[in-house]
Length: 252
Image (tube, rainbow, N blue to C red):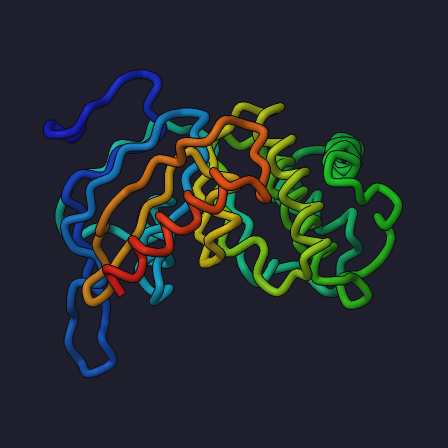
């Protein structure tokens, strides 16, 4: 357990001075992440903004245990992580229902049970009417929702989302944000979201972590001081957007 950061049973994740080496493409291994320290409380919604996009991808792999750190300590206070990837990662030869049930199938859950859970999660993301369709005929928003439903079947206590609103139009993004907040509240899970859209980060997050590149490190962390539910048309909301924008400009 890290000895230089606060930890309690209410802590979902602690990174203490984590460094990660990666191949730079020139036959040398350099630090992709360096001296990264971060503490996340259980049930917190945290957005991570990285202008380069490189550091966040590496950071998420480290958190999930897919990449070992070269230095530093990691305390994982979560039991069941799940991820909604940027590219959705749906299997084109499977129906929506089969895609959502896939994670449970890998855990050898009986077919009747996994299909029941998959249908429950499809209803939770408002897609119960398309369970027999294939990914090729889905809109980008629908594919994102299917990927979210698949993650929810695992009953995660930590949900990682990689740019969930990328490529969505304003109406689709607004609908997904509303449903995501509803799901977050109802499941009391911790959410880590990589995001390059500042208004979305302000609207959703308890805190926003800003990263700088080469190597990736945390530049600053900002608490969003707005009560929920948040009105994205209010003067206070615009002030928070400006505050976050100015902080990003200072590190870019």
